[in-house]
Image (tube, rainbow, N blue to C red; front, top):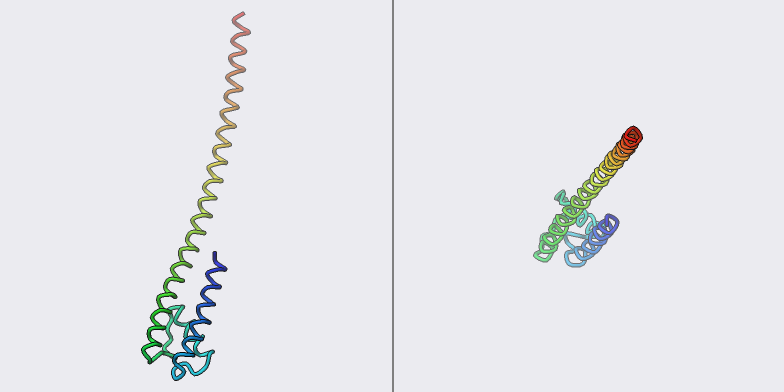
Length: 125
């Protein structure tokens, strides 16, 4: 999932930078400036060194901000789920070990009880 999130974010930055460059050449004089602005805006940093001044540029900026916040939310959720899954696996392993230990003790007790019962039968006859 993480590689896809990175790929989608990178692709979004490149495409958004291209669109910004095409629709607002005054504020985004080169493709590189457009991509820089898209990366900074997707990351919700917004340095302010490059900003759109046209209506379409601002609409694009709003869309990029929403996408950036969404991508960051997905990233946080993904990392959190990985930690929860790792903890769940560790707890499951610990429970399985405890289960195996208790099962071994019960088998040992069963063997002792059988030995005791066998000894009682021997003394009763």
